[in-house]
Figure 1 (spheres, rainbow, N blue to C red):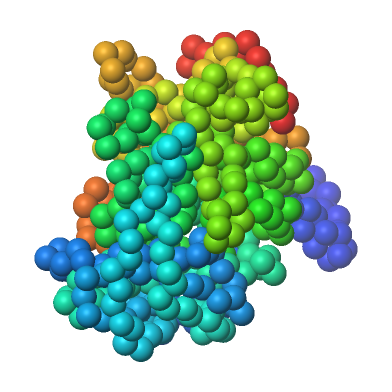
Figure 2: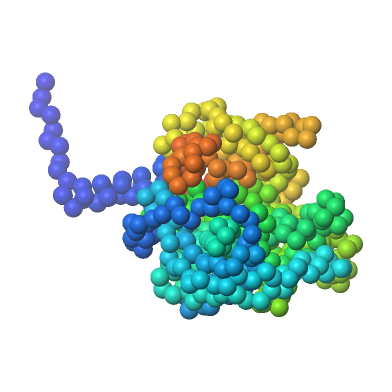
Length: 508
């Protein structure tokens, strides 16, 4: 046998370039199994949650209910003055401001406490006859200036009466200059829609009938029960992202309505649980941001379902939510049909929410397992799940599904296809993901109680904890916080695999 021919040696620079090219290829060639990128973190979140926390923000179950109040703002910035309207039969009270976070598992940090304020029992609310709008026309009893120590975030203002009575007033401290990766949107319009303080909500009146409901509800009144609205339901999520030091900021439905252009300053909008009531400006703002590459993660269900308008109150702008729900009752019917307050999918509005979400609302009162058809998809990385595995109770409360006859992004990918039984029918809840032409990604978990699964560590008592749900949530936030998801993790359309044949596919 003759000698083997010598192998030519390539210059080191050529080898280096080849290795770099290979690395780039592995980074940018889409792979459904590739894990999401690392968290975008913010030092201020890390520093804030290193501060001493307290559990004193909680209200004991046996505390008297002789004090309640509301604020003249849903959200505020540093420099704003927030007026509180408080009614109590006690001789005096004080206000304690707590910022919600992780804080070593304590859940809150006390930022401010007022002096002692004389107690006042305010007059009974008024009820407007034509719309059954409840308005607490009270006098301002105390005010606080939002100083720099009020770090942006989610706050509970705790009203503490000299009698021992306690209640909350929720407040979001926002930063309109923020360019955080994520913006968490508190669903304040939905909180108010279900608020039955004074006997009326957008669902029921004093006689428990739909006909006697409010057609317009006002923020100029306390929230029923302990006054927190839906703020407490967000705490498992807030504690998770702040424990991780996630680059996040906070606002409300009202803020998206008033300043929709600010959404483009972020990489992803995140809404939780039950963000049901949306105005035209809110939805148009989200669709415009999606067209610019901004992602949307809906960690809930039944979102963008009710079309609303805002009106001003005596205390400020956008402090009344208009939702007649029945077309013929709305004064704008036949006058300005695009603003009639029916469900988004119904005439004369005719803008089904599936065009934004992928699936859309079907039914409430369910409790079922989420079934994972393909565990190799990026969202399940690190969970240990396998094809066909279940997450017990992950589909709970209200759920969404693919409606084949509704306008639906043709790129939608079903990540969870979960059988359930609701109102006498067997259907499926569909957890989905799609990427738009801009590269923006939209994730819809399709369960209003998903955030409850994140209750694994303090400050929230462990209940329906599932650490795989925490990993899934982190995967979504990591990917969505990095920028448009389409270039690295394009969705893989698969609706036909599950027997859905889209009749109105769209390309958002």
